[in-house]
Length: 423
View 1: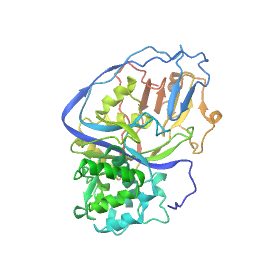
View 2: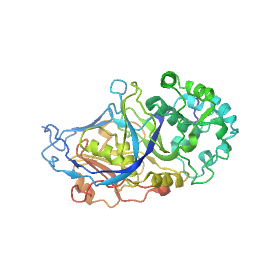
View 3: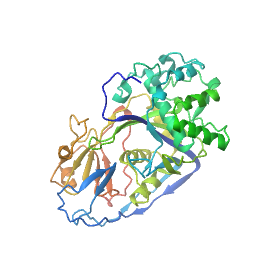
View 4: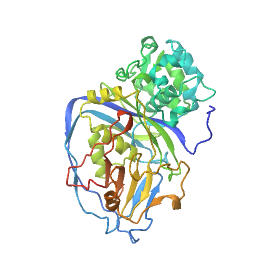
């Protein structure tokens, strides 16, 4: 797969946020208490906060050991989200963490064989896919480069990747019969992103066989679709966000996040290869467990789950995602700043965010740092779009700016008075 740009210090990837209606409204509220790490013998201003294989680690000090409790707001939902546990033995990137299904782009996702298959439904040219590939709004860099040797539009290939990886890791297969797909099913309007079509016409043994085959060779996903006369349900995936791993991490991914709504929770099973556990949870439950140190969430998952917390009803979330599906998205490249008592992770629009953040890998001495505390840095700011980590799970996420393309920021999930809202 020949790309039209120079080699990048990261891999391209796609992730899928799956939500499924649960037929009832559930409410969760919980007291959370950050567990205390061993007291550090280092001076609070020393570089004892590091990122190791994707994890934020911080030795507690008397200065940042707040010994406080935070209360999560009682939020109700009528849907769950799917999270998978990454295999510690098979992954070096966020190993052991709970993530949305997804993975790296494979050359098979851009295979010309896909256009042969889509052609059976009448999709002969990129324009046949409608706004999905002809969007004239600002595009993140990840979607601007079209491989010079592939006829598959980049927007289509990334959706294929997200669907393929979701199938490999969870067994959830999103396919539509070729006979039901036509160029007029192309999201021609901003409110026409359908609910996901789950393909459930396989016996368990057959499903496992195909999952193993696709895991070994991504090209097998084309053969699977051809065998069942079906196409990846790219139409149900709405653009949601784009995250580039911070430049101080050695292993990095530029990841497109899509979101898809399902009418019911499908049969789901982790693959015992890349993932070791799968669970459908209320968005607020996963965040509560994270704060209680019952599971680990990478920062993008924290942000996206808190963004979902604005929507208690799946119907409202689906409409929002559909309405803004073709408005464009902004790439988020978090920029780390070490402070006296923790770590700030800055996002675009924040007063402290650099005008031209570094894209190359940063050496430790190149990482931003300050002798001020996070609260002192907050007092000198007006526009906030940042994480403030005291420890791995003792954090606050603040966004008081209007995001571009009519997107919405993360919801404040902590009760007022139980956390410093200025951090």
